[in-house]
Length: 272
Image (cartoon, rainbow, N blue to C red; front, side, top):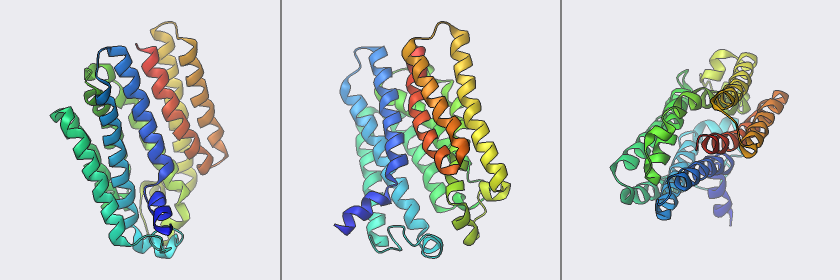
């Protein structure tokens, strides 16, 4: 039972679930808009994304196990819920799931998914402790819309502009996430981007970027033409979720998870 709980915590369930939900929502909308796209492509694409989340979450805790013993002893490995070996097995299983689910989809989604996961692995093993810690967020999340589109079998032109919006939001998400562990990272000498900027500056930048993305997306949709009530409602829910994050890093992080799903769905529906 302890191992089951440990594995569940090992994969960072809240952000993993948000990324999988976002991917499934975008894939479902693109599939519905395209018409005639086989449903199995959406299922396998979502499964591949889930595998990537298992890989990166478990590998992150494995790579940070020595630092966590000092700064965050309640994490699954230092607390004794799982062994380092089991963490590597879980990470390997996640990679196997991603590749196995991607192979039937064709070379493009396979390669895009591998590139996104490789970027995340680089974060886990090295870049998370440097001022370049934001780079894997920009790469992995920038590739995600293209990965989903090719996975479900629609043209990438449907999501070609998405990385331009995803980039600033991904940077904000990274800073918000790093701020939650700011003291622990400082204790073990991490020099990630949030540490380099400072607590106050990093929070202001994260909140400003997140709110700015919401306002820009909303303005772009309004300029493009009438916005359906459902898209407008989703957009406002996401914006409200981010705005309330002014209360602190933990609230901002949670709000950004909600906003990511809401804004993805709003954008996809409005550009049908």
